[in-house]
Image (cartoon, rainbow, N blue to C red; front, side, top):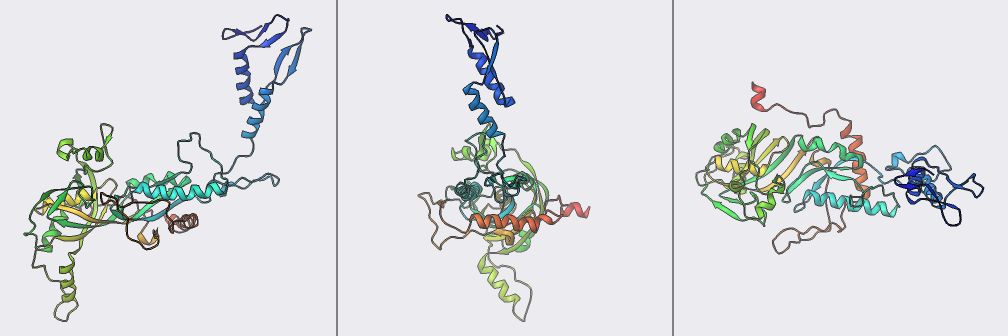
Amino acid sequence: SIPIIGYNCTYPNEMGRHRIGPLFMILILSTATRFRTAVAFFPSRSGGLSSHVSPFMTRSLSFDNHMSGTKRPLSAADGETEDPSAVAMPPLYLEEGLFAVHKPLGWTSQDVVGKLRFQLEADARTRNAPDVRTKKRRPWMKVGHGGTLDPLATGVLVCGVGSGTKSLQKYLVGSKAYRAEITLGYQTTTLDDDPTGSVVDRQSFAHVTEMRTIHEVLQQFTGTIQQIPPVFSALKRDGKKLYELGRQGQTAEDLNIPPREVTIYNLKLVGYDEQTQTAAVAVAGSDESTEPIQPTKPIQSFVIDVECGGGTYIRSLVRDIGIALGTVATMTRLERTKQGQFLPEHAMPYSIEPRDLIRDEKGCIVVDKREDCNWTVASINDAIRTCRETLMTSEDDGLKVKLCNNEAEA
């Protein structure tokens, strides 16, 4: 007999026969799974060896042969087989790649990902698609986004399905463009109009009466600048997300958040509050003058266009602009107008039956991922194909590092 980990592979019983030791059986089963064949040798009564395949090994071999057979395809493109008699298994993904959606108001970026995954996984179940997960706690289908948008922000959000998720990282750090509305006179804990936030500071803005003053201040924030991220963000401090610490009442001064270097490629003023803007349009359209008049009263709200690099917080930019104007400011509206080569016309809109937004007791918009909308499996797959056939064929991905205005002049 051969000693194996303290046991003999064979040992005699009272009848003179031999049996397999328990650890030797485990070794045989593992060998059968790895090499797809195994034969257990039992000593015969005459002293010779006779081969016998264990029934446990038969099941192991059957399972191994099943696993080593024709692999189920992950996408429709992988479903082709050379053997016409082989039964084609349904693919997990009908289409894989990148596309863009228009993020609805009140949704987090993860709400969007959850909605898309819910639609795709429901379709995969109806098609009996394979489950290739090694850990059941992981999502069945790979769906992700290329850059977080705040719940109160809308606009372009690049998403990826299947192999397309591998390309999302470059959209996190690539250039983006936004249109933001700035309201002077008050500042909230969240730096925006989130109903969960509260007003922490109020200051007069009566001295802000000229558009020229705002334009000059905006030029100070063009180029590479230092920016302190907002407390209510997903950044981490000591293993905890900042917004969790903010909900506990801690401020930016308490947390001592270090500034980060960000890049503002372009920043310009595009409009101001509605009453003053209406007056300017009337004068511009008259025969007397084509120059818009300067406001004669304090300017409380105005709109800016921002093109920036990854990691820039528009809420922090709005806060700093308010301070530079000698008052405080809050971001009251934000729309992403560009992400890479994706523009609003490339984004799949979100629409449901007309109804009022549902809000909870805190005033937050309630999101129902199961409600019927125009984000269907067919529309998602069509958006991926359209993106692959149009935007992905261009050499310019819209994410290349650009020179800032002051760097270009140098």
